[in-house]
Length: 109
Image (tube, rainbow, N blue to C red; front, side, top):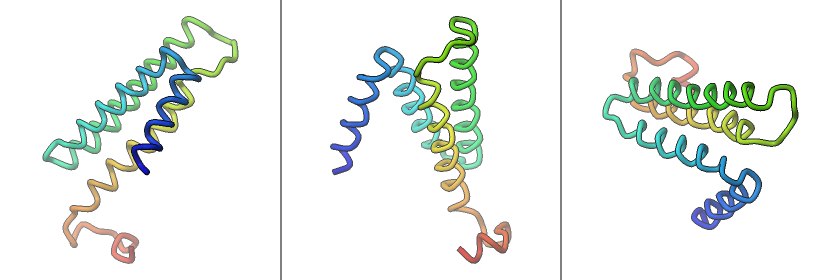
């Protein structure tokens, strides 16, 4: 079922965003590769840095090429993806923390 959802999601992005779909796909692949780094702390912050850099670059490109107009472009998807990628990365980082570094809220969970 997951493969079906992934395929449908990618096809919808291709239909809506056409060539800009590549940006979303590349940022997804790069952030996934960052999560495979052994040090989870570096992995989390690197994922945040890369996803925000990609989003910022697309925002700046958009401001240069089409300032003031409204069109549906890949910025929408990238803003959501930044939240998703960083959430996953920091949850992965927090999953391996020692007991003495956990907050009271983390211990309740």
